[in-house]
Image (cartoon, rainbow, N blue to C red; front, side):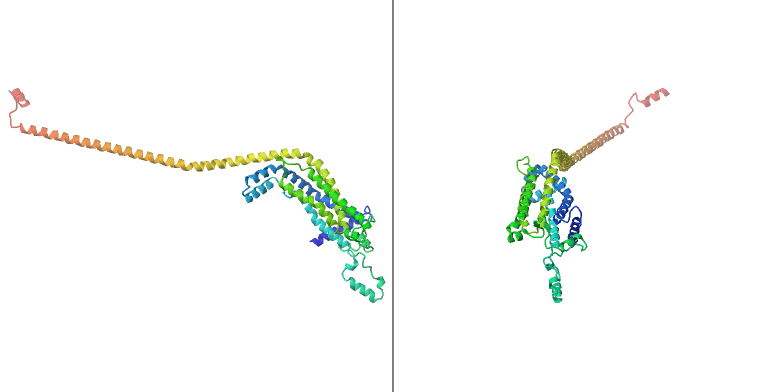
Length: 390
């Protein structure tokens, strides 16, 4: 896959080289190729800038999370990542445009090395030289210092021009295939343009970083966000590293870096006028969204708390209800028992009354049976009947 990408970039550069406006300049071809790559990467840069602005907006919330979960680092990281996901923030978003250039740099490095490959480094070169020597035509053998480029179609204009040369010249002072340290070791005078190119490269890198850091003000607490500090610390070292690398890589890569830095300076000016000019509006909208989501969370948490409180109070209520029911049952049982006792007493009273009446009847019957042998007293009903007969 990497070889296919290298071949694609090499042929794209060859196509740019063949344009009439380029005029057969290797440096201009590299510069136009760089500009095309930067235009493709620009949307990623704009998204990274917006992500950086959002990072500054959520800084107070991050501090709250760090303070609340200072004793639980795992929970703290979970809450921070949840906050990032909720607001669509990439913690390393500010470094993505820079990191995205790393593979492009490596690919372009391989392309320039392949284009400036010399015949002495080509395969079977020793066999070809021996064939010419065996024929007695050693002076007709190709110059081993000339280029024999890779990754190009042999019918392309760039290929036919390179095989005739042993230097990839640009502005008549640069060899884009040579390393500055090699030029300086052979001649300091020839190395001055390379030093000036490296100084321009480092200077534009510093200026670009100054554009970025000038827009980052302290947050409400007076301290910069820790993630932004880390990004800034990383970015501060890049200009130094770029200057050091430029001494040991082909000069064509320095042209690539210088062109990309110039483009990014103009890009940062555009970002300042467009995105950062609307930062206040973005902050207001962001704050309104954050407040709305907090309210939604409170509304969602309230029923949960009420249900928990209901569950907690359910047990005492159930116990009191059970006790009340048990008391009612006891009261009902006592009333039933009292009713039964009263009924039993009433029955006993009736039985006693019936027994007393029976005794009275028995005594009355006994007295009547004893007076039947005596004469009927005067004035009784039989005597009256006899008087009527008379």
